[in-house]
Length: 332
Image 1 (cartoon, helix red, strand yellow):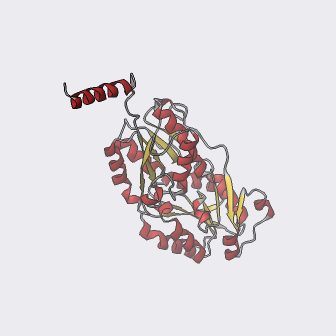
Image 2: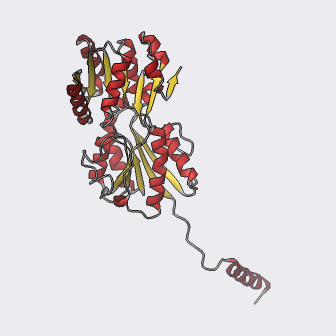
């Protein structure tokens, strides 16, 4: 054996000696799909996304000890204001065979996910009524691949109307917008209106192109205020709706805070960022082997009344002290 063969032999032995006994295979990096209605996918991308909800989810994962890039990666998908993109987004994420999907977008999006896959776990972050919409068997035991959090949106419709009537006492007629993804919202609002003797005007919006006409219909009918859900069509056009409400001088109660953050008058809702942050707990359990069918669906325990004082001033509204004292936040 010449000198080069001796060195090679020693090198081979050295490599054998330094390899750890029982070495573990490389850790699997989980892939987490995310669906958000409204903004673009680029705002949800990476370890420091601009999208506040996506950022809240990543903070929740960080608090649980997960490191982006080492333990998990995200596959974010936003509709960029085009809810008609949801079917293709759902098909794409299911085709990627991600480990879990965190999804907002109400019943329509979640129904599409339920139809598209029975195996990929789905964590809901904004379901108005998961039992009523047939997404799960019960809150205590979902029974399928969907779990997460319910917004209780329908249950608090009455409270939203009460606050709106208190904020705008002269509004004899309240126009309630709704679309095909939120028909249950109108049913809940109608029941409350009939029970309390309030006049509600239903205005269905079939697509985004009908939004300006909906405002004209409300104005022509003499509506003094608006009740607006965060449905697929309406939430994806939040800025347009807020601007039209200001232009038509119609005070509006919104289902979710993001409308108010961009200039809307008032919202009464759970903290959505908190819900996305809490979704990390569900994802953690699922990645560790929990069955979503047996993970109870949680409901928010705190609702926030957020008022935009600048919007009120522009509308010529004086906010009564009885409303201000209830507000969790007044945006100046």
